[in-house]
Length: 121
Image (tube, rainbow, N blue to C red; front, side, top):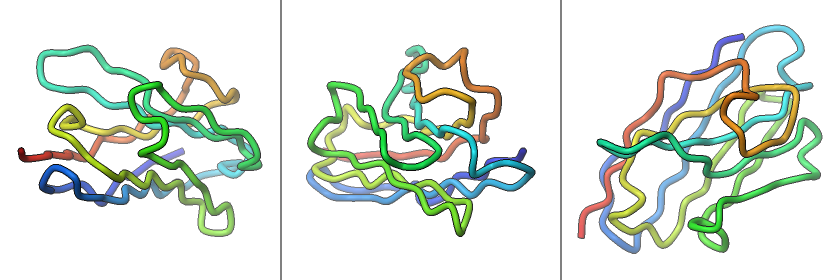
């Protein structure tokens, strides 16, 4: 399974970005998918996750109401719509795939290389 993120960039505070994660490989549509982020000098943290069907989503408290995770299994792609961005959202964002919809990074088997999101004040 290969995961490739895109859509990162530089945005002003209050702006929006949509990240995409394109997945390839067998049984991809049967995986739960998650987004994590890692700011400079900090540990990787959970952002959002979605079940393989898309019916179940979970979010970190820091992004609830601002970020939305979605998936299109016909395109093997997962999205993270990010609104009302703040400088605290600046990080490298990673998508991950695994058997469970979980906040725990260790339970994801596959990871992308990450995409940088920078929010200026």
